[in-house]
Amino acid sequence: MRAHSRRALDATKIGAAPALSTGSNGQNTPQKGTKNTRKRVGLIAQERIPVRDHTELQDSTGNRIGEVTSGLLGPTIDKCVAMGYVDSAFSALGSQVVAIVRGKPVPMLVSAMPFVPTNYFRG
Image (tube, rainbow, N blue to C red; front, top):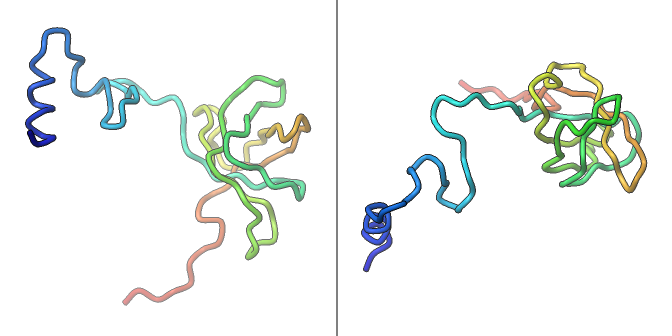
């Protein structure tokens, strides 16, 4: 039995979840019409400490506002950069957030992506 026909049979079972509530990877995804409360942002560390994935992001009062998805030292700008998801209220360019790296707070600045503008000619 092919995968697409097996899925069609599973969808007809009593109690099957709506198609939009579970993604293809089994994770729950938002229903149509719901508002997304998190946004993907670029982050630049104010200290020279790399912020890696799954690092917690907090506001200035210590409330959890998001998580880093990836981070590394950006050799072109010679700063530690990261990308992550934060609550919409903290997604404005220039917002200050704090990443907790090995128990130490690292101040970060929300930045535009890409971090370095492209210089190639597209004709």
